[in-house]
Image 1 (cartoon, rainbow, N blue to C red):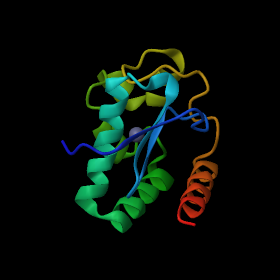
Image 2 (image 1 turned 60 degrees about the vertical axis):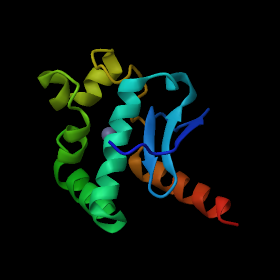
Image 3 (image 1 turned 90 degrees about the vertical axis):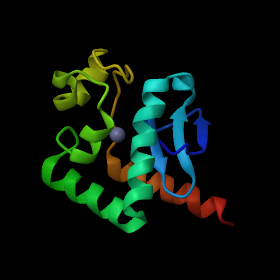
Length: 128
Ligand SMILES: [Zn+2]
């Protein structure tokens, strides 16, 4: 596995972690020692490296729109450590604490569109 830069943020918009292509993976400070979560996000980082930026964003968005989050094959690839039940019912497993990766009752209660907007603003501010 490729080792992406890991950034620990105190606020991650209700997510445990996510990938910012070209920047690294972002992990919530409460999960800084969570190797299962780092492995999950590293899988997404490797998808980005393998596909290139545009295909990564395009494929991820297409799957997210047509299949939703839990059935997104790019998410399922990142859940290889989870039980078969949690691979298919990931949101519920994260919220209830059944998942290996993380336990977060507020998981994904902020819409992905808002997250993407926040990350875009962050990258614009960083580039100035
Ligand atoms: Zn994921």
